[in-house]
Length: 205
Ligand SMILES: Nc1nc2c(ncn2[C@@H]2O[C@H](COP(=O)(O)OP(=O)(O)OP(=O)(O)O)[C@@H](O)[C@H]2O)c(=O)[nH]1
Ligand SMILES: [Mg+2]
Image (cartoon, rainbow, N blue to C red):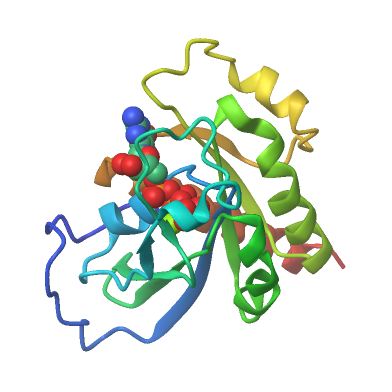
């Protein structure tokens, strides 16, 4: 495990004939952490996005502090696809980040093999809900810190692990959701983690 065959830019890529294993992965995290951006940058098909323009009507409802410049928000989910190798395909579901859409999450988690929690260190509190829900569902996850350019505090991964009270076995990595290679590395980390968990289950009597 570890290498991704497709280096194609996002576009229409037919699914390989040999593809036989489809894994459902969800991307969760607080409002505006870059979930849609991540699905968009790694997907080999043009992703389905349910973005809506945030309007004046959302002022006071949509929580935009810390995400100035953001003009759209996900209202249902993002959907994308990436082939990890000839046989294994990941289907990516990006969750909506705003609190008023959180009721959709539990449905989105059904049949999910694993999840990525995207974290913006400027608004770390937003990550709690995602981590709580995943732990509640027993869905394995990795945490990826999406570093924004104006992240002046520059907390180390150790500090972030402590702040989120993450157990040592949960992988924690940095990424740039805008960069395809970086997004793929996050997904590979998750798949490796799932593999390790499955192996550990097999070897425990
Ligand atoms: N500078 C910088 N901007 C980013 C990064 N990732 C995402 N963005 C921008 O941040 C904004 C929010 O990204 P989205 O992908 O819409 O965030 P989201 O998590 O899907 O948001 P909701 O679905 O509304 O919760 C967009 O304008 C992105 O271009 C990053 O790593 N660095
Ligand atoms: Mg989104």
